[in-house]
Amino acid sequence: MGDNNKLYKILGVDKKASQEEIKKAYKELAMKFHPDKNNGKPDKAETDEKFKELSAAYNVLSNESERAKYDDIGDNNYNNGSGQEVHRNPHDIFEAFFRSRGGPFGGGGHGFEEDIFSFGMGGMGGGNRQPKKAQPIEKTFVFTLDDVYDGINKDLNINIRKWCIKCNKKCNKCDGRGIIQQIRNLGIMQQIFQGSCEHCEGSGIITEGKSECKQCKGKGFFNEDKKATLIIPKGIDENYKTAFPELGEQPRVPDIKPGDLIIHIKIEEHKNFIRKGNDLYFKTDISFIDSVVGKDIMIPYFKEKININTNLFGVISNGKNYLLEGKGLPILNTSNKGNMFIEFNISYPKIKNKEKINELKTLLNDVFYN
Ligand SMILES: [Zn+2]
Ligand SMILES: [Zn+2]
Image 1 (spheres, helix red, strand yellow):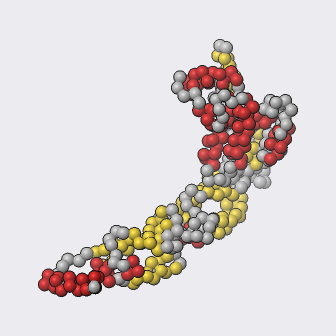
Image 2 (cartoon, rainbow, N blue to C red; image 1 turned 30 degrees about the vertical axis):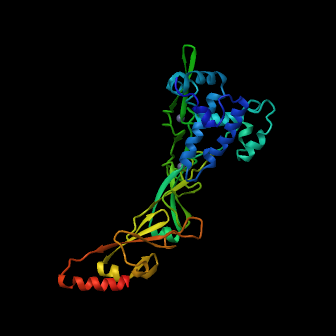
Image 3 (cartoon, rainbow, N blue to C red; image 1 turned 30 degrees about the horizontal axis):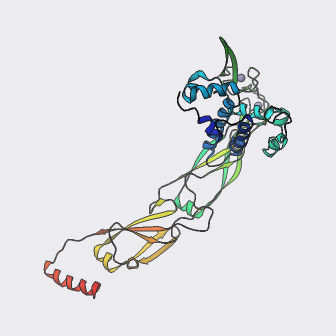
């Protein structure tokens, strides 16, 4: 039978939780992890996944007979097909939850309006769907470590493809959903199958370009340049994500909002430094004699030059990291910086004049120990 606790864990409720508690847990978590609330956030992929899990868990546990079945047969068996309630669309579950006045909140619907409005989904309570959003477009920009050090403030021209409102219309076969639902009767069970709409190839839209159309000349779309300023703070790493609202995929029919343009960052390797978090690692060669007596070196630190003498660190050891405090990368959203670590690669000479070795030994003893 296996573990049959997972769905409860996802909602953070006890196995004996009442329907009231299950609904309360779902409401709080689903609003927090709803995709519309997490647009442009760096962990959006995870929060979207979480939202799906939450909705699936709620979908089963809010239905007493499915819940009993789940409790009885456990996770593995339930997901392997004995459960009926696993494959619903999380958005449908979420919307149904908020639409069913009287259900979730015990008849009166108390607290319902506030919940909806605080979430910014004014239309939904009245039975209307929230305006849908077109797909995001993801784009990767490559930056240098110098950019990371300085921060970025860059004007961009973003070419977007706009769909001609006159030449695109909603598919009437699927009512613009791109999906066709079929209900099949399997003995005592009824199962809902979903498939892509063939009429519109799943897009929900039919293009009928009219060659006399001034806007698109019959192509159904036209391109437009939009100006946008990319502002990226100092000290970012490749996990940093940002978005230009509404510069992603454009709607093909009215009452759909444009999608967002999501910006991912890639950072090039630097010729002088290796980056680890906010710290920089710098490697340089030094001769054996210089490692002992000290040498003036210059470290190119972005636009700055750091001049030091290696005897700052005493006699240099090969391969050891020497710390230069505060000479790393800016730490995101602070005025602090990480550190720099300098590693020396010492080239050791061969002894050419063995007769002088004893003299050298005496001299070294004098220098280091007397
Ligand atoms: Zn269709
Ligand atoms: Zn047109």
